[in-house]
Amino acid sequence: MKTAVEQTSIELTTDAEFVQFCRNLGEQSLLEIPANTEVTVENISGNINRVRRVIFTDASTQTKQSYIIKTLPAEGRLERYPNIIFPKDRLSYEHQYYQQFASQSNSRLQNWTPQIFYVDPPNVSQKQTILQTLVTADLEQMNARALKTFVSTGAAIPKDFCHTFGYHLGLAHLLNNKTDLFNNPAAAENRPYVLTQPFTESVSLFERWRSQPSQQWRCTLQQEFLDTYKDQLYPIAQDLLARFKEDPLQVLTHGDLHCESIFIRGSEPTVIDAELCDTGAAWFDTGMAAAHLWMLSAVSTERLSISEFLAGYEAVLIEAGISISLPELRQNTLRLAGFEIIRRIIGTANMLYLAAHHAQQLLALAANKIAQKETLL
Image (cartoon, rainbow, N blue to C red):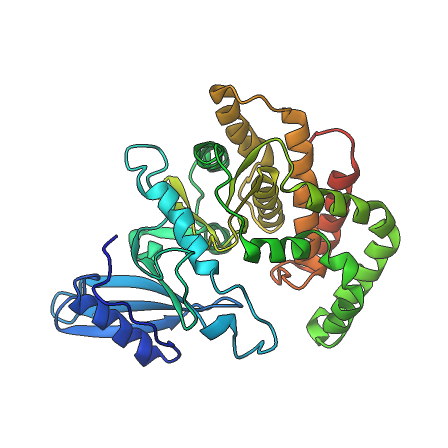
């Protein structure tokens, strides 16, 4: 990654501003922009950042160069949520996560994260009150697709992908289990939503579903689930939350391994959106990934094996001689997976592609995996 000649701290709001921002970086030789270009901009924003895909196409040769530009609005605020202030260093943590793997060009982790072209500011300690910007390679231009896209389009997932993904995740964790690398406030703020939100904010969630005619079936599902399981499951969620920083296997977690942050790039896995990375329990990553493999399996003819995923992950620990209770790791993985499924069905970050019968089956599965004493899948 090159260093900018001059830092430009501006607010990017419109498509035209994103395009001009790229052109400015091109003039500094930080981005490659073809001559005689036609420009296409796609808004791929998440719920917090402004994110654009900017595609430059040479009008003569049709050669394309595409970039992902991610920014965090001023002071971490977004127009849709003006009363919420997000940690303004969250993109700096994502940048540092990517940097952990940028030097691994000769290892099996060479494609684990996308290439970084530009970042402002370059590190967490540098104060920045106006804008954070991260420009990375566009994986879709490299024939990479999100795991969810493979399933939704009926594309064939590469053979042994689940085992390969588990193995790569294990390698990523093993690379970063030596020191206390991170203490990410954005991640700490988000973890309670993963584990406890459906229990602590049940009233507001109920009102949310009731206000959406197509989703009102979730109200009944939510009430039945909480009436049956809340007293049993909520203490387990609190315990997991408290032990994230105390677990024996402390690693640099990605923190948000959902089905749209896990990419398939050829036959190799790649991850994006690491803003919630943090040093903590390995089972947070394995559990979240397992949850999304389960949910995708509910709507897919593809075989997405949790057993193969965990076998790939555990193989790395065994090869490295890591002394840890694999049954305990597996049990905590299944528990975290269960809570992520619950959040995605009756929490705010719901999976709308799941029909009512899928959701009901998955909630029952989640409760079973959280409560069971064994580590069987």
